[in-house]
Length: 60
Image: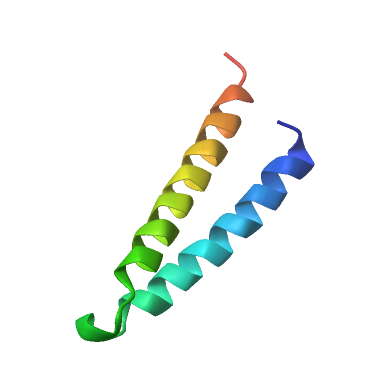
């Protein structure tokens, strides 16, 4: 993945995790759990993509 691609994924990931944190502070009865699980999955996947991309760039 190119450097610009990693930056774009990182920005999207940050936006997703901000959305997750805003949903998490709501009372349990008000949380849309389907949306929460979707956001958590997307955030985890984007974090994994960023981590793998950065490890591939390490010189060994």
